Image (cartoon, rainbow, N blue to C red; front, side):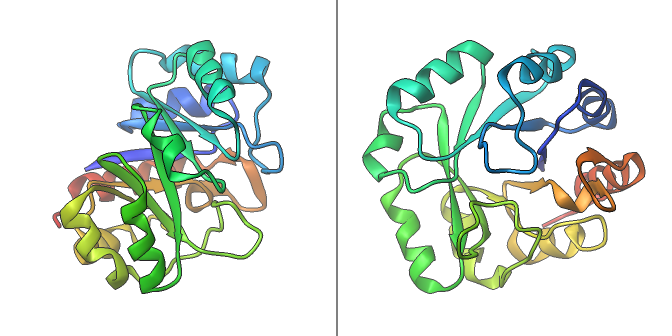
Length: 205
């Protein structure tokens, strides 16, 4: 089970994610996000874990040149595209995957337009580019989990991650708000993060 802790904003939380056994961390480069990190801070957040787990840059609606420059600057393993990027853009980025909001079968069908073996699915919400902290109907994506390296996101937390894995059999799980301190989107709760990783790691699809 590939486990990603997303929305990290401090070197301490990044180091903790590594210590607790996460496979990847996500850094948010979307200015409108509560978890946005400026480039100088991003360097500090990534420093203690570089080369030790996968580094994912969360982005939205950037052009090809900007995306490639961002990936080079921070030596990111992956770009996670949350905006209205056209499918052809993804074909030009071998180390990127689409984050797709899911509300119904039409959204699942749309996933076939986006290239790459990996795909992240989250709850679809009007005016929000991911990070809703809300779950969706997992049964909609069980088929996708057999076709792609499906990363399940949206409302996951230590209390439901085992059920989510059992229902979907995904390649991986992604959590942000589900392991945060109450009322603070920029700080992770060590106990919740530890519980989430342990339960996800022990789960069997």
